Length: 532
Figure 1 (cartoon, rainbow, N blue to C red):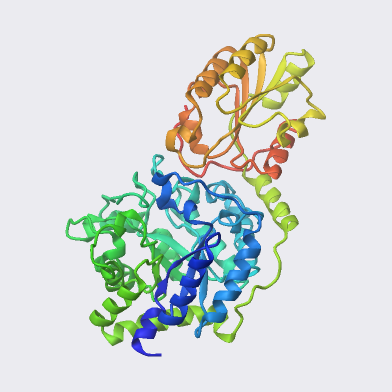
Figure 2 (cartoon, one colour):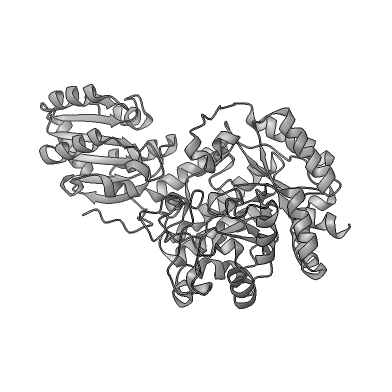
């Protein structure tokens, strides 16, 4: 290859599965004319995180999996050098593609006892197999971020938790699972996005820690990853003034962070990939097309993810970079392509995903991660109330025919009520009827995983729960992000609280059996939550 063709390999533009034929042909043109090294797949333009403010409606397509498979085969046929197909599939292909297996969020896995780390390995392995079934060999996951800021708007549920040792162990297990089936992984977001309160898709977070503090905490999982030869590390769009002479320079554009800290001080020799260059924390910095791509490469990134100015970026790098630097990045990328097996022609989709395998794994995780927050003999309390005909169940944000209630009904039948979104009348009616019962079993199905707007839980629901906790004996099962516990008022008055994390059928069934059989809860909160 010429130097220009080698530079083309560093570009991984976005490819949208549900897009127009015109845009697919444009990708084919990029492959043929610029020798790009790979693609990063997203569901659709409306689903891109930077489109929050446009409020575009996501059009779901049950055929996305087959379409993605066809696109990968089609694009590989255009490439003179096999493309390294990538995707951000932290909790499985379902994060981007309908009708595919979904695995628990990292925060759920973080609730597992360390002795069950093999389940995290299995998640990594199964995600790897699912990705290979569509022709993808590079997962931009997992997070190595330590989530030590409960107000973090973008990391939270995507992190394994707050304990640096456990985050490191679980991230490495996830990576090992993927690697063992031939899929590359990526630790992100260096030097650590956990202790931030700004979403880097929309603005620039700033870490105020000193280098010593970072080495003590945020950098720990990355250091362990480097010791275990992690394939790649993604640089986050976040500023660390202490590493940049007091300047708020994004780490993705900082030689001090990438070359000095990551390469020289920490000794990382693998592939460095930028976070998506369309994110607003960096995308609006330069007026000249290609300048951002050059600055990111110059700072030390080998791969430019979601680069939007490819022709101009190639020319800027060709004009400004030394041949030695170009060769070094090229060799690192080729090493990864070789490890993934695609240089030998193994680019076609392999195997098929299996929903039953995923279901069995998710059930094992549920059995080991459900967490007791408060227990005043919950099982005895509800069964005694049932004998007195003074037990009622109420489901918030799901119908009463949910799996949790259906599983309970065989041994714990009682009147059931439901409250849906924007249904204030149901709250009023329920409160009137519930005066006849002294014990209430509540299932709260949290609407959103992100903390914005109290996880989208309405104020009327929060007030309703507050009144219930004061007036009744309440046992609360929470199906969702554990940080929601911090926004529920008067929670200390609840008789019992069980954190279930996911609303998957397997988790609902397991939660029901936990109550019916008074099973031990083996999980532990992966983050510190000030509940009481």
